[in-house]
Image (cartoon, rainbow, N blue to C red):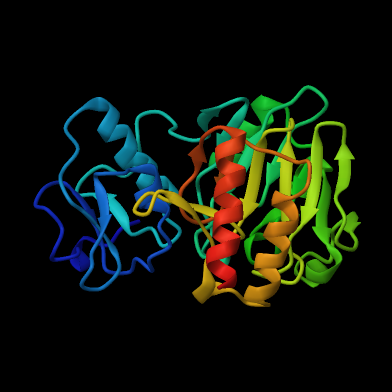
Length: 289
């Protein structure tokens, strides 16, 4: 619950606020663009203006429910009248919300499919996630992009008997994993899911391509609205930046393509497969120079 006594002094006046315990994970800004912005003075989030329409109120509630530090709140109201997560992003993809401090607020996703649902990375353990999952058919697979964003994957795996996938180089983060990805070559997990290792952010980072066009990138790739191009997090690269650029270049030169990007941190983006592939190659050229 957000702490009214610690309300950020730079935020706009009104019932909605962000407290000073925000640790700048970007999650609230991602789900409430335009309402919640980054304060350049201290790097944390605040309300630039109060929500006015029902759609904006829903965005504000998403920010409340996504924030891992419980820093977004309303002066008197504690919960929305109806659930705001899972958030339908189209193509059977849902943002799960309820991001975990253990993954520095990374987003996690559900892909609803007849062969069995997929969770990509994991939120914190809460009935606000597992009760909707129960109604949507549970989970068949949990796909972990890397060691940072594991959060409470073990509890969701136990509840649903789901198989858990992680790369061998990050497997210590999920010792309960049932399936270990090996090496640098792509692996077909099932006929609609391909895992592509991209060592760099961590040694065991993986991209997951679903249905031949939906890319789940973990912390290896994101979109920059400011620069209108793809980006990677050089200042949050825990293994090797040079290796990350080589890995992304290898992915761009493969026969795998995507037209929708879903990332752990930063901004998702939709564009043509050709355009996004060109953006990856451009990122690699920039990052390698």
